Amino acid sequence: MDSEEIRSAKASLEKAIQSKNTETMLDIMSRLRTGVVATEELLKETRLGLVVGKLRSYPNEKVNELARDIVKKWKTDVSRGRPLKATTTGGTNGASPASKGAGIGTPTQRQAQSQSSNGQRTFKSDNVDVNLTDDKIRNNCVGLIYNALAMDTDADSSVILKRAVAIDAQVLARASGNTGSEYRNRMRSLYMNLKDKSNPKLRASVISEDISAQRLSNMNSAELASEDRRKEDAKLEQENLFHAQGAKPQKAITDLFTCGKCRQKKVSYYQMQTRSADEPMTTFCECVVCGNRWKFS
Ligand SMILES: [Zn+2]
Image 1 (spheres, rainbow, N blue to C red):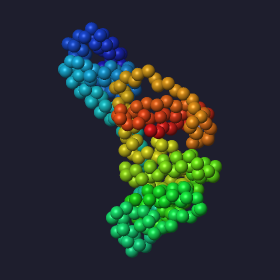
Image 2 (image 1 turned 90 degrees about the horizontal axis):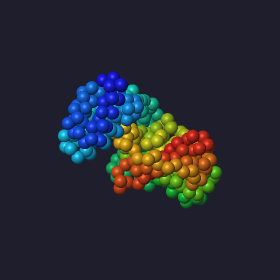
Image 3 (image 1 turned 60 degrees about the horizontal axis):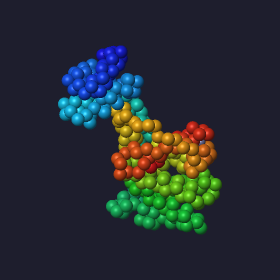
Image 4 (image 1 turned 180 degrees about the horizontal axis):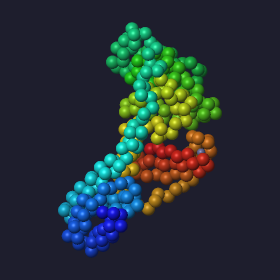
């Protein structure tokens, strides 16, 4: 089917849906099933995915079964249509993550460390003193970052401590030397991302300094996210091809958020339920000054 045929088939399908003519619907759908090789562009342009996607909950069983079948096939088509994107987001940089700064400890030291990590390797189990400043908050944060970084590495404790201290310094500088909420939120967010079990690459890259402390402190949530999370986001994006979105969420401008790039407080945002209903809303932010975008939930 060429795009003209597809367009007219879609129009006939919509008509058949309106007049509840299931025979005609099934007939058109079977033609679409065999005649259409879906691409993202095609589905966006014709909005055909939305029409068929909706039919997945159509009260006639034959119709909704066929609709599900078509959507499944088209999803496969779409993901086949962008294998390049999939491999590049698969992360080609840093072929051997743990290669650089990791091998500093002597073999015996490393063995001892991995033995003690049967529980979890922490600054305590490494006998590392994190009380390097007279600010309790900072010392705590350095300890947390240390524990996150130490999780699954055999890097020498002095290396891990150095990275944690550098991260503290960068985030503190970013927060104008204050350990207020900006510093604390940032450190908490870095800690959560660094200790994420599905994100070993982030830890390894920080330890090897493939990602410097400075760069880490400026990364947005999408950059920090694990491969799994990125795949999930891509899936969600794909699912949107088949889901009619209601009225566009209202955007509002607030001074509650600070742009991580230009430090201005003119941020437009909206909230949306992106995952299941019992999980928190995702907030999508865009800096109206420099266009920097990020999201959190
Ligand atoms: Zn900005």
